[in-house]
Image (cartoon, rainbow, N blue to C red; front, side):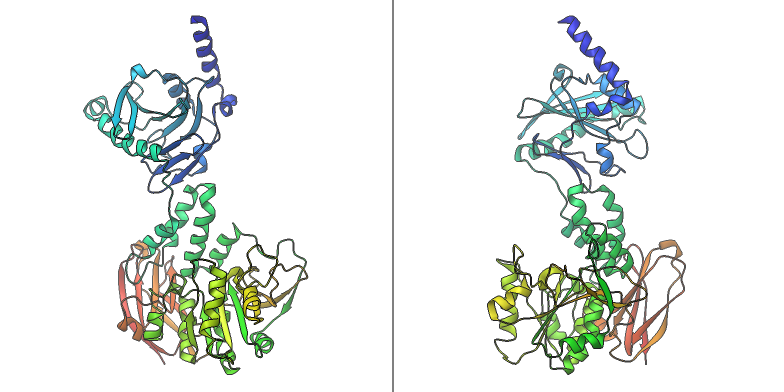
Length: 545
């Protein structure tokens, strides 16, 4: 037995000093999640651990299967066995050896060297090593193994500071919530909708620089979470009128419709679109939720559609119609996507022209069937001669009957025998400087829409060029020391009537700039500049006449 112990120690030593053998020490399981601190979770092992540290690292770096030399020394001193133990994750903070952790699954731990710490939800073991300046916490698992976290973030502390510092209280504060999490199998994952809303909803005028902290957050997300956060990042980039960046962000997780498609682009104009749809009863045009130019196309068609008898306009984006009906313009309370200036402008212009604007989305039960019934009940049921325009998101206007779950576009025909004319501009997102509006012709479109569009239209002004507009220079207070800042333009009547208006135009200021040149429709406006802390630093009025 004595020689077996020596042999195991010798093998461990040889492996730990050999960089080429690092991968053998790791067990690839679990995920690391970032909330306000890092969390490691593994359902298969029954481990749910909050590290209570916001290490300046990326998510992927926790699983890099290569150890630093000093990390190997730490494993040796904690009696890590390569025969029975495995490393689950390790972090090295960008500042060096400070504030870092090795998480491991261990079979045998010399518990006689640890202090047992009990809580109402179980017990764990704690040890501080003053020589190596490390803290190790060991949690017993139902499998009979142990989960160990070895922290080595104390190298800069002096001997006097270490003697004075109460590591036991700190360990207990860490152990309590982790034992509760292990007991109840709770993994602290981020709710990105709530997180992003908390950034955006800082005040009644909202924070249109929300995309900035999300960009920094992206590298800290797990592979499972990255898809969700990337969607929110693209959306808030579009709120900030970062159209190119939003498109690139979205395309990083969702392939463009042009990929692997045999197609040809044919020139298209607004008048050609109006000519195709003027005799229809129901038009459904979709959008990619990160693309403001998709809303701009719909807005530019409004007057032509109204002139051809269309009177009803339903938008998926509206969640609360009350302010729109009360004021004839949306507020920040009208919906999520209605906070984007072009979506708000779309609703404003529709109300000005005379459309009956209505909401129709419903998430409880069968969403597509509910949408279909709501649209019918608010239009054709009360007006047999109704002509209706619907602006929806992504694939909701698909007419493909072979989809596993049929969509709004198909269900309207299935339930009410009304065949909509469906326009798809969400599937193709290639920005084309030469052909601003193109019809994408192919025999392999899977969503079975009537018209496919690649939309590269520039956003010209806040009224879709349906009314008179003028170029104007808007002055900016010198904010070099607090970049980025954001310039927001509000309709003066709206700004004075409600405390949560939606801007008609905005511009993020990232470089030295004294003037912003834009094109605004005739009217009176309030211009507000907010700094990167979301504080108002300038406000003035301007009249375009």
